Image (cartoon, rainbow, N blue to C red):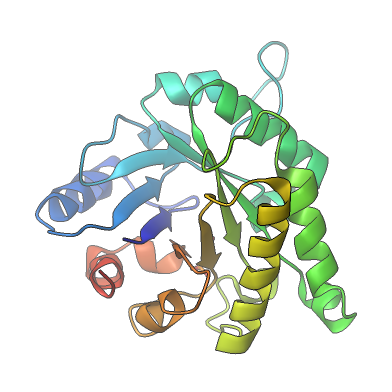
Length: 235
Ligand code: PEP
C-alpha cells in the first residue's frame, strides 16, 4: 500500500473535481489517495479519495484578512492539508517555524498534515542538501505531533514542475536521512513521500526505492489520464 497525493495548486474547477472523483471511484486499488485542491473546492472525501487543502493559516482565528484557518478547512470537509510546500515557502516566506505552527493547528483540528521539506538548487550546489532536509524535519514537525499522525514529503525544490527528477541514489539518500531523523524523534510510523516531477513513466521506479512510502504529484494530478496510471503503477 502506497500513499498517492495530488496537488492541484491554483488549478481546476468543481466540474473537473467531480470528474476526477467519479473516475477514482471506479478504481480498484489498495493505495490511499488524497487530492489537495483550492479552498473553494473543498468538500468531504469518500473511500476513493480524501480531499485536502494546500495550506492552513498559522493563526487560530481573528484579524487575519484573507487567511483560512485549519478549523475552517476541517469544517469544509477536508481531512488532510499540505503545509510548507515549496511555493508557500517561496511566495509567503514561510520558515520552518511557521510551518510547525500551521502543522500544529492542522493536528489540533484533526487534519493530517503533509509537511513538505526540500532544498533549493542553490542549497544543493552549496552542499547543504542534507542539513536543510534534517533541519526541515526537526523544525517543521510541531510539538503536538504523534507517531504516524503526520506525513513528511521530500520535495527537492529545484525539481518541482521542472520535468527533472533526482537520481534514484539521491532520492534514496534523502529519504534515508529523513527516516533516521524521524526514528530518532520517535516517529518510526511516519510515512515519507517523494514529490517533484512524478509521472506515470517514473512513479513505479520511484516508489520502489527504499523508504519511499508514496508520492506527491503536482502537474500530473490534474488529468485523470495522467493521475490514474500513477495510482495503478504500484500495489
Ligand atoms: C508539487 O506541487 O508538489 C509537485 C511535486 O509538482 P510537480 O509534480 O508538478 O513537480
